[in-house]
Image (tube, rainbow, N blue to C red):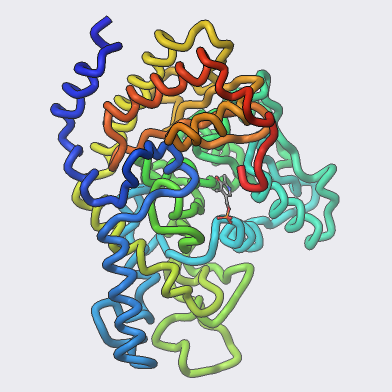
Amino acid sequence: MTELTREYAELLDKQDQLSHFRDEFYLQSNTIYLDGNSLGLLSKRAEASLLSIVDSWKTLGIDGWMQGEHPWYYFAEKLGKLSAPLVGAKPREIIVTGSTTTNLHQLVATFYKPQGKRSKILADELNFPSDIYALQSQLTIKGYDPKTHLVQVKSRDGRTIYEEDIIDAMTEEIVLIILPTVLYRSGQLLDIERLTKEAHKRGIVIGFDGCHSVGAIPHYFSEWDVDFAYWCNYKYVNSGPGGVGGLYVNERHHGKTPGLAGWFGSNKEKQFDMKHEFTPAADSGAYQIGTPHILSMAPLYGSLQLFKEAGINELRKKSLRSTTYLMELIDQELSQFGFHMANPKEDSRRGGHVSLEHEEAARICKALKKNGVIPDFRSPNVIRLAPMAFYTSYVEIWESVQILKKVMVEKQYEEFKNEREVIA
Ligand SMILES: *Cc1c(COP(=O)(O)O)cnc(C)c1O
């Protein structure tokens, strides 16, 4: 039972090789931040790279495109190259551009090639709504009815999706598959390699939404031959609110004309020829559309330096240790309060957060916040708790569970309404 003591948590912190990264982040006193899977916190490095870009605008004006520490004209490619180790891709396969949803639109516009009967898109019924909206509108644009042409694999338990069920749904009518790497609610990690193999056996193109895994879990997109992927950088990658997203396209597909063309997707040497014939970049840069959002990309540079120093494999190891520790504490301290742990328990099947279900979840979250613990509520009944490998200490995990226990014992949640806020 030593695991239950604060001293044990302190010991874990002492043994933690990554603990010094905590000083790199802006943490608020009296607050335990467990919501880095929705919006990662600001690091000093990210702040510095943002200020450096602001300074280049201040001092260089238009010449900032080609001069300064980070010439803006090549910044998306530079950040793509730095992102490559996070997802196991070749530098030229990644570009930092757009948002999760706009990148999905771009990729579906490029890779959805219906041919006769082979015209349906396969997704799952638990993916994030924005992904589903994008797929519905892409089908509509092509003249198909999403009701018949978007096939969504059912969940057997409302929390997870069985890989077997996805594979069974890979029929000869399916031409494209879009799945999350990690499900945003339950935190289930899908077997990306296996699903990619099975899709390719059937001649189906497959792409993944990496929002809940990039920056938390190492991937091997190139090696696994994943066709494409897209993700946001403001969750585990700590690039700031609305930070520009990332996109991977396997080099096998390079040279295709993107579905949504724009001048920033040009071959960079030709772009300023201002010709009306589009010459796409020879790499994933082709998927850019308009002028890059330089200020919203700037913090990513500093943040990626931290990833380079820590290493994604080490971060994953700590994340697994932290979530394992959190799950053990929850099992031992909270068993009589009606929580259900909805995330898979095996390391190979879970992402970076613990998913707790409770019928009073909305107001339990409000009570936690009042006590200085920042969780994440997902309607109707999910509390997501995400210890961040970069900055959450084991003592904070221990304290969070003590506070949650106190909230339950004293029924502190009863002073709040069990409804979500506008943002939750
Ligand atoms: C966070 C998230 C999004 C958000 O999309 P944006 O275009 O960045 O607003 C989309 N899909 C998933 C799975 C997410 O987790």
